[in-house]
Length: 68
Image (cartoon, rainbow, N blue to C red; front, side):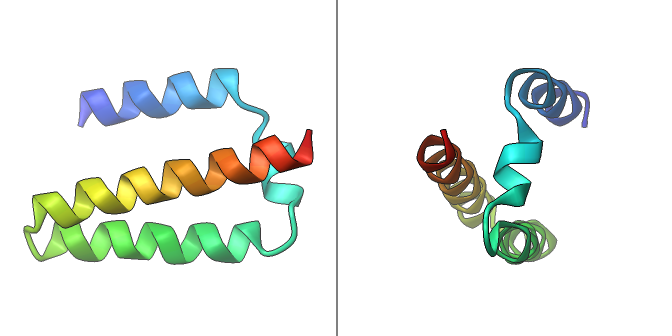
């Protein structure tokens, strides 16, 4: 998906993933969040997938804000 790739590239360029990933349990949480996104996509539930992506982004943002 070109739009998804572009969005990921923008995130990677603007957010310090090393700080987010260094936060305790963030890696584990991110894996579970990605699994939730993939499960929703696999079942064809677009609404659930969008909500899971939003939850994932907000969770990472919360970790980033508290790490600064």
